[in-house]
Length: 366
Ligand code: G6P
Image 1 (cartoon, rainbow, N blue to C red):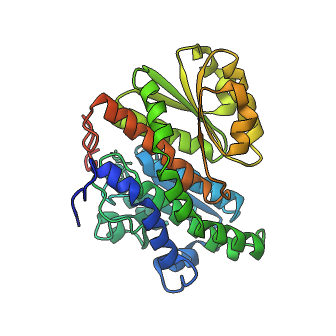
Image 2 (cartoon, helix red, strand yellow):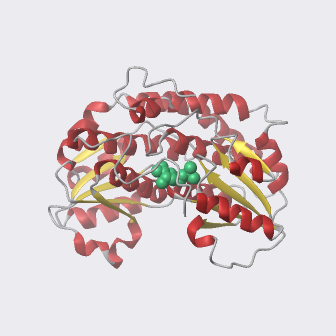
């Protein structure tokens, strides 16, 4: 149901602000009392599989990348991740001991749907993670999990993306419960930390001034580089995609550790770089990559917690200081400043934010 913009200048802005409420709803619906829900069904379908294939396009693919990190490291389930338009023509051997998960906001994307039909034809169990329960993918898969984000109107995905992340987090924790490699304390701790997420997201959404100032500097950029490591890498990809989609500025994302294998050649004092350095074991490594580019003049915006910002000190031009959060909550929380930044830059550039040129909300042709 489309309830209009409800006083917001754009659907995208409204949908970004709906995110904390959607996370609350997902916690309520799928959290502790998940027995009998579609998440419970997915857990039963996936728990004894040797591998999981994840297939998607666009932002949904980046959600799948985060999902791969979680499912492998917490639930010990090996994941093969593919872009749908590549997967469907790849003739990859699939084993009946594996299952597939198709991620799609619309549930109608032509390439993802074709990939789903292809795996079904091979007799492989196929589930989908969709925001549209009446969609073709929901109908045609053996089971579907619903992201409950409500109709998303802005072409560039925001709330559907964080809802996909949240469902992948919850799926990981459900599978981890029955994994011999994960103890109950870890699952409980992660679950508790997810409960703080809506409040942390609300805090983050209030930090518009810092983001506005950074957007003012980015609006004239021709290229922007986003870097991160671990789960911050897919978020860097998503941040770069958001900027491209709505501001038409060329943006590229790289794993921070790969900079030295090419992109560092691009760094000069005109290149803005957005560095994602959430707390955790990779933070120090990301900050050392930051120092490498700072010494070459890059204009750095750091998105990190207070400790990370203090450590980076003189190397940076701007910072977005994030609330403290647990590793499981990080991807949903760190997505917000990336969305807001792209939105603010697009606003300054005067582009058609909800309907960017050449893009469609649902791509039902190949
Ligand atoms: C289009 C949209 C993107 C979306 C992608 C995949 O390109 O503009 O925002 O991520 O399709 O869509 P899906 O509905 O399958 O998630």
